[in-house]
Length: 264
Image (tube, rainbow, N blue to C red; front, side, top):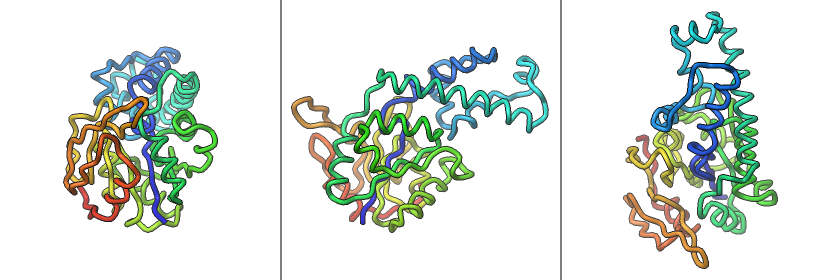
């Protein structure tokens, strides 16, 4: 049985700029931390997989001293855990508020995949409550209930390590050759390829200039048909899919039969 596995942030919705970034900054303010990430700074932070891991990039000796934080590593980890729990609460509130729309095509393709008997999953290094909030936003409550969710610290290593995708394939009971991953970042793509999976990339707010060599197809959006069309721009098509104005499940099926996954 084929399986369709979505990344969350940047794929289901463009959440990094309008969800995660303001949630991080509000958290820093609430905890009195001397940090505030600009859009340009956060464009670099998104290359670090996992929210706690991004927060830990702050922890230079100078920052620790300025913020009055403990120097003991276990105590620091406890502090970061507190920050991250609060950040997840803020972020989930933003998502539930409905101000960030789902990305075009994700629900349409997921519905078509379900109808065709494909397994559906989300695999993300974001915290599970955050992932479930975005999934319900993008898919609605009925369709989201059909998804398996693999998220957060369920694996020890974050993307670009393949752990989250290796775990997802195992839990789904799928054959790697039958799994199509939809990602938006190079780190996510590398994780999928390292797990031996085919990967379609739909670029997002911070990832348009990344190197996606190894992806089966790279587009700017999955697109939508009439009555509110969103046209897909093909950025790289190494397998010759030549999709129409929007991606279809048939295009994904073609990628599964034609792609030969290789590590990037």
